Amino acid sequence: MAKEQRTIFIIFGGSGDLAHRKLYPALFKLYVKGYLQDHFAVIGTARRPWSHEYFRQTVMESIGADIGDQEKISSFAQHFYYQAHDVNDANHYVALKKLAAQLSQQYQTGANQIFYMAVAPRFFGTVASHINSEGLLTAQGYNRLVIEKPFGRDLKSATELNSSIAATFQENQIYRIDHYLGKEMVQALPLLRFTNPILEAVWNKNYLSNVQITLAETLGVGERAGYYETAGALRDMIQNHALQILGLVAMEKPQEFSSAAVHQEKSRLFAQLPTYSPEQVAVNFVRGQYGADHKGNQLAYRQADNVADDSPIETFVAGKILIDNPRWQGVPFYVRSGKRLCQKTTRIDLVFKTTANKIFSQAQLQEVATQPVILSIFVEPTQGLSLALNGTNPGMALRPFMHTLDFWQSQEEMSNSQEAYEKLLIDIIHGDQTNFTNWQEQEHTWRFIDQIRQYWDQNVPQFPNYYSNSFGPKASNELLARDGNEWVWSNEFGQ
Ligand code: BG6
Image (cartoon, rainbow, N blue to C red; front, top):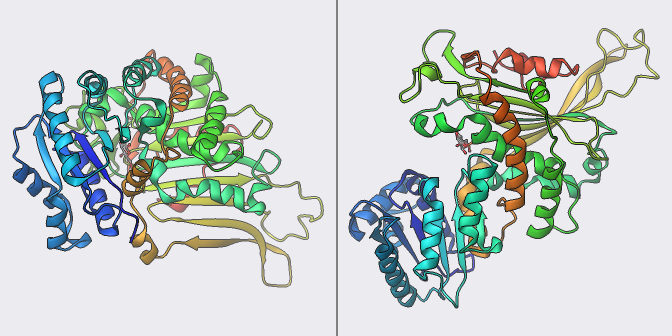
């Protein structure tokens, strides 16, 4: 059994989709594992006038029968309380404070509080400042603030948001969620890099030709068009998830594996993201928007509900990023993310340089030349590693052949693996900020993203430019072809 933790969760937006889909099932798993036992309570707040009982019913329904028996689910739900709440009404915070104080006594939670913002981002600042003005912070226990993405929509709004929460919470109390940092294989990156000399030694410009980070989705924009029309793939996936992965792949070795040291190295790396002129943006970043599929079974983005007929919003981005430091000079990092692609896959491909073939002549090597060595790290939906190496096929002549060394998590291990939210929640309870983003990282990544956004906003794109169920627009392949490279995850493996 895990060590029991004492705390109160105050979830703003407690009746919402995120809370029910992600947070309550994750909290329940922590309850089953014993991290949460008798000394915790959850207060859900939202506008609707729900009773505690009704709220508990919705919480129980959010937990699939496959992860717990009914009795356990129902004893878990008894820890849930509901408070109708208007984020702008100071009186409601006073009522909330009273309820939290009472539950803190009742459950002996040591006055520890986790404030979780699962509301629309425009309310983040308002809620944080009321927490301060109505005195909700406790003097004895810890007070932590959890913020969902998006953290702003450009550098200016992110800075404003940060100032509004920084008036109430110190940086070491703020947990900015990027759920990709909760994924097992993303968390494994520092360990892979820094405990395997065989990898650490070659993780640089001397051996690597390019690095590819792919976040491909099969889903379209679904019912989130309202938000997506104001965001687009650049803000939705690149500023956060793709760049955070890039940070972990490209940062220098931290002095130790602590939150402070990892953030220091990631921030340093992000400070080196390139400055692009508009002309350079045009060359280094491409965007796309999905049309219908070849067969016309799936609708185009512009045909989705709440999407403008002439929407210029991108559902696909591919970009080339050069990091000008001694480790990476001249090694392009290609990032790409898109909706309605032909496969759901999150992967990192490290493509090695083909060392000049000094000793084998083409006459000695029959038929085919050697291929670049590739290390692929599969994040989702399968988790694993594969290393493609040059070898030979048996026979009289030297016939180069790619051998692949694979490691895949078994189905059983995958089903035991913790979901991103479960891992992140336990980190918050333990006070470990390693797997969250800090303000400096946000600042640097937004500065970089703003350059691209500004150029794109001034130029009307020709959309749609890729079919649903494909690998994205042609321009994405051309981006790499110009450097003599190609995507590892590409047509030859798919359609
Ligand atoms: C979210 C984006 O952050 O990540 C969504 O807002 C996207 O648009 C989702 O679909 C993808 O997450 P995952 O874990 O399914 O790869």
